[in-house]
Length: 324
Image (cartoon, rainbow, N blue to C red):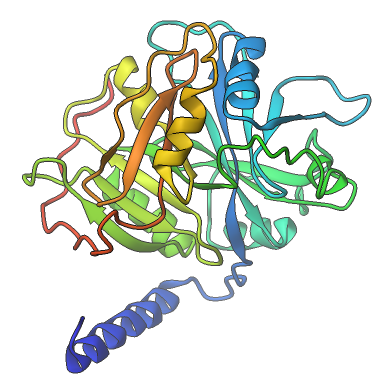
């Protein structure tokens, strides 16, 4: 328990930082609309049928039909009424990253576009309003400081997700929610400015696997409970390592029960065996599964296994090796 005077000091510091960040905004900058959570994570797959066997058949979710008459560029598997995984087909070279993009749900895509334009953000679409996506929603993308594609999507009533509201939610789903997506981060300071100062994400925890340098930093969306997990490094990761750094996490109330459920199901061919169930550095019990292309899917409980919080690590940020 944090003592009252210290708690008041911490609250005051947070408020002061908020004021200072607001003061840094350019004169005439538009207000930032709400960022509600993670809409979807998109990964490249070598075989859509095998990938769907993993995400739908093995993990128990349902494929999401695409809009009528639209070309099937990618396939979707629905997690819940606001979240999904998007599967991008294509040949995968041995060195190619599997992460395609991460999408965040916003309450107003036009306002988000105006806000980013007022802050001088590069790479925005030239239109005054956000374009319509293949799913019938409003969406546009930019690049974060690490080169990751970041999409902002506003669900519309005639879009695919809203038209299937309350549907395609089978009892076989292993988890009701996508809690976070892990992304590789080398440009740490620039990423904190991008996600923290520009987009309003809030840091909630940081951890270290060995105690010498930081390994992870969690940043929660400003208007919801979902978060990004920064996967930090010193030596630039190999392609094999990227497939575990870039991951998605499905939150379950009981990881032992979830593991038993998945143990009774047949893993699709090509999916390697899961890890053993164990508590992570964050104190939360978890099991790692892998889709047929090696992308990691973490099954994790929302709280620590012993009910005790894990304090953030004071370790320094690693000095990242440049991308080769």
